[in-house]
Length: 244
Image (cartoon, rainbow, N blue to C red; front, side, top):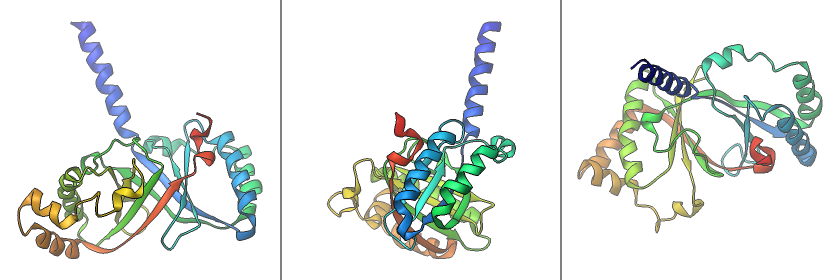
């Protein structure tokens, strides 16, 4: 009995610990136009030296939208406790970043934000990644964050109906309250075509009944101040997993 109790204690402790590793920090960086090759070489070396253990980096290149040509650096999920204890990763790390990477950069830190993964709103596991993604940023209207979150919870059933791989993050302490809805394209961008994807209006009506799309549109206009989206491709050669 004691062994059984110990097993359950360890099991739930490990599950609880894992569940807390749901915080991701991401930011965008823009190299100088004439220094892209040098920037990529320096970034690759930096990642392999300092970002393959607790502070792993996934690097994506922006393919569309206002930040086209930029690189998004997304850290592997950690806990808030780890964020508290992080520090600057040491003088050698900061020297390499400042002297070897930033020297080739024209802008850094755009869209820097902490995001908490919301499993209850998502259709995929936290680390069930894909090399091609689309990120839609939805900014909540003042006082509508809770209603916005509830609206996304309804949408989860619609994403499941359309067999969409969607990961939802709620931004924390990072500007206006917003959600990042990330569609992970496991089979490539072809799923965006009309032949492979039912219209959102049809799926809403199928899941919640006829006329649901109109009701959802009214709800959306009340909860969401603005939105924009972008497509990104993972740069496997620049990311922590490039050695695997």
